[in-house]
Length: 215
Length: 162
Image (cartoon, rainbow over all chains, first blue to last red; front, side, top):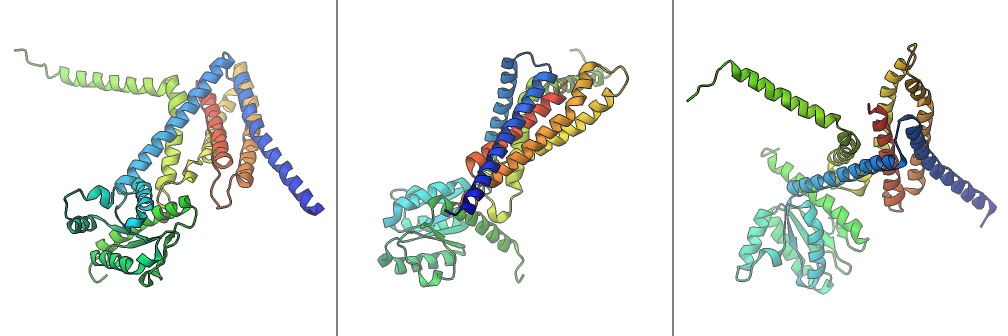
């Protein structure tokens, strides 16, 4: 390691220590002024008031998160998830994670009951959905025929397609020009990207639906 | 059956209005509202506004929306400056109470500590608060500035409290 790099690191560390000390000193000095000027009876009274304030802040954060989540779900689109049976586990996981931003996630094992017609169930699911999520099969041998059929189904229904590439999946020819969520990235990043894409795709669809003919 | 005197109805309505107004004043003026309700509302509104003003392309809630600390501390600082200007004008009147004069004398030092805190917190966030993917780190990027912001807000709330 070169001396220049060492001194650079040292100055960085010193800067950081100074910053952390600055934060602590600032909070402590505010505490000191509270004690000396604001007629606080005892340290217990101060601790009590401060903890009530921090609890209030935490409750505020929780309430806000709750409201935001509710709004996201209510405003979110209905989502249709198409997957190959071999990828059921990952499809379940994705469906669970996207429920936070969708008012309904159509997932065959939940939405087609025993004894129901499968094709009628799928048609009803497609009619009720505004975004089509296609999980490309992880087995490349299964990929092309099955995926092309699903893409055709989504296009017939007029739904925007969001492809999700699992680790081994091959991207079909008709999807090569479309950006996909890649599960080879860290899963949390891929889901975050997918959530934003779901909401954006739904908004784009709504916008194009509301446009006058010929616009 | 007794009929209601029409002259009594407006009086009764006025009485109800007064009761409602008294209840509102009691809630807003209570120490619990100031100590608990003000931080609750400040934090809840900060997060909510951050989320609802996001770019449509990044529409979902992100952990970055929880980083309200520096915004809150700036708001609290402005509140402190506004409330202190009134205090200073009261402290220069001849015969002003000693407590008011002492409080006014401490204002520059308090401002200095808050500015140091703002500088230090923003430096900590800049240097330690981001991970390699360009997202805020939960500890240094969110919790530390939030703690600082809530601490400044609580101080100012108590400073203003009669």
